[in-house]
Image (tube, rainbow, N blue to C red; front, side, top):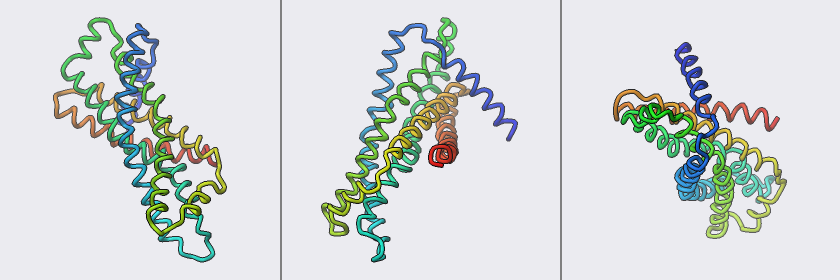
Length: 248
């Protein structure tokens, strides 16, 4: 297992070396880049909005229910909701969710191109297929993912505000005051930095598994599953390392 993992990592490094090459035709590259930003990033906005609103609402409810001590100020609910969203949910948890949507999409798309011999045809024509297919996906998603991260933070806070507005669990004044209290701007940048790393992991790992598919449609499905599982594990590992480095 260890030897197999080392071989896979070496093959992944070689693959990345082929991916990050100067595009042969910049016009086609930018055309593909805009298309991938729209497909991988913009199309993920509705999912991010819906999940963030509901998670923000749930966090607010849970904080209100569990903070019952008279020694804890009521605005702590808003503060805790903000910290959870900024530090973990809008970066790590949202990236795990996007790994299922974006990662499986990339792996299945590239895997289908492999089994239908479209990639082989590009290689015969002298085109660097790894760079032509994968590079726009990686750069496009990495460029757009900070927008998704900030949007998730905002919509999560909106979800908590809806609970304050339409229930009697916490007043809107206390919730807003909690959001504003002891705010640390670095936490926002911390979340954005993490999502940039996670976006690279999601796209590159998914592309790797899709690019080296062998067989037919069954193997494409298996590659998609492996891509999601592997990228999720790597995201959690990177989360531990980045938290140690950025918040110590």
